[in-house]
Amino acid sequence: MRWQGGRRGGGIEDRRGMGGGAMAGGGIGVAILGLIGYFVFGIDPQTTTQVASSLGGATQQQGEVGTPEDQAGQFVDVIGTNVSDVWTQAMPGYRAPNIVLYEQGTGTQCGYGQAAMGPFYCPADQTVYLDLGFWRQLQELGGGGDFAQAYVIAHEIGHHVQTLNGASDRTRQAQQNASSQGEANAASVALELQADCYAGVWAANAAAVSGGQVALESGDLEEGMNTAAAIGDDALTGGRASPESFTHGTSDQRVAWLRRGYQSGDPAACATGA
Image (cartoon, rainbow, N blue to C red; front, side):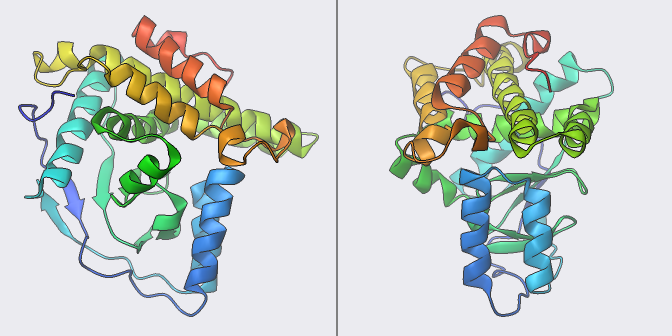
């Protein structure tokens, strides 16, 4: 993926090297809770972090804000800036989210965030939280590569878009009114697949808004599709969970909606019901 000449917004808060923040005993258990909750059952990170916070206090940390000096941090800055540039053109009133890099764990306005939860978006502080060790986990799951990493960032910023356009609130209301857990989970699937589609919309427009400085290259789309397939609910649970328990969508669904967003380049094509 071409990205090194892309515009840097410089608004990345880097908390790496600051430790995991203050947390009482039970951290390992919370990490496992986050891993299971996020990847398997798709529990809203806001809920998981609130649970983690109740198990042990979290100290809100403040890192340096700007463009990190290392390549991984610069990549996040360029991609995050490019994704927001696309949404600035596509969505009236769009405002970019905050992006925080951290290691192990960190305080958020949603509670205590753990790396084991994977990348997550906190609507309370409108911030995307990234522990870059997740890239290694992607490779172990069968994904990985520059575009795969960019897809994850774009997906999380997609959740920010959903906060701004009301889709997240509508989903929470639908879940509260659901007559069964399966119905509530279906609402979550619709939200997650829409974020996948939004990631595809970004990919389709990345080059246009950057003058070609940020752009997909040969094989990148396939790389993204492989990653979407690797993090489908059926793939992550090894087929052991019933479809009614899925909250992010199957591998086929995630691939299909990422492709749909890319092929259309239009957020209006991402009508998953969220």
